[in-house]
Length: 620
Image (cartoon, rainbow, N blue to C red; front, side, top):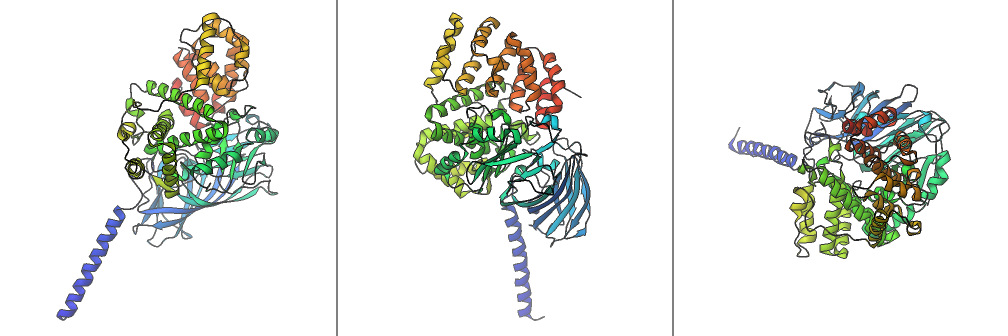
């Protein structure tokens, strides 16, 4: 080899080494951060699109079929890792041919890694699987557990890390995918998903779905039941069991108005359709923001639209959470704090500042109670959490919601609403269909709001320190002042003027009941109950806070114990039932709570069970 060729070979070798080093540096700069709640290694190989093909068997209570993924190999990886928990993995293929796979060590919270062998050029993997009786995301309901009591029902709940219990998947919020699905169900039933949905039942029970926008796996959702659809507008509508369709439609008749007001604030709704399905009472949350199809509890149906702030909340998630998503569950406040703030702005636009202020003050009261409850573990009151060795459900407290809300409300007060709205709109639109860490948000906040307008703000104290900083925005409400004066008068005189409360909203009633003095007597509660019949309230929120006070203050009038038991057996909303079981524990009545829980537990979703088990120290 002559000198010239030697030089060329050397240059080529240097170039190849340089390229390899550049690739390593690029790998370091990839967008996926370390995720303690997923086994996936997306910087190595990541899923990009799911084609789901499943059968829903109510007789066996099993979902079975295939999950096929388009994948991207980011680093010449020889395996791709999915998350799976309590699933039967029957076979795996890579580009249509059987491939090796293995399941890792089982973890009670995280499940197992599903390690799949791939080649450097593998484009698709297919997992053949079925669920088991330990699948936590899915609740199978018999007809008696539904409203109409004629057909069975099924729904899933994936947040935070339960999607892996009904689909083998890379179950991290920072991984976004599109999906198609084919779902076969009994022909008497309809299937709906967080995707483009049918409006009528198919003749053969087969349904096809498409989600064209990229979503994180926790927003994958399926419901199957004897349901019907009724439009509110050309882009909003409701699903419910047949006997409830008209009632639900009336209750949620202002959905289109909510979307319009939300778009005025922070930009175009990105998901085309905003529908709501009201599920059976066991659904564990007020609502779940599954894109295009919010899942909701029937406890929102009050008859006067007074609890529809939950619908505003789930709509707001279409921007904060679904459009810009917390990268890890340590950053959960970026989803929920922003959403509570946005919800409050929607409610103000539709119903006025007084209504919004009342909601804000209730949120502040919830926050103060949560901070007090964590006085022995103040680190749980940070906005940015460290959940690396914990279940992410542990971070789903009022801190993320209400301290996050107060953080943003305080920022609004310092920056001015006009500047703050411009900032938030740019934030949502500039980071659409992406994920966000707390640190990345703080950098964006500094550059695009605080430094831009020469503002000073104690961001680190809010985010990384316990409790609520002293500069928190103070929310006032004249209506709540009147409520406080009414309560004071009743307690002092043992007399009730019923005319004072005839126009009260649900928020005023909740504030009234929650602020009973600690030394209120059963006799005084009887006077209040006889005047307002709170024991028999059909408004679930009023009933819940009244039952809480009855338990704590040992009120026994109007057959309230029976009403509490009926409520706990009928309702599965975690916030409501956990509040009442906590009241039993606080009042030294754990045995009474356990006696009811043993009757009610089978009606609850696993999410609710896990919380109440811990509260009451229950073990099967």
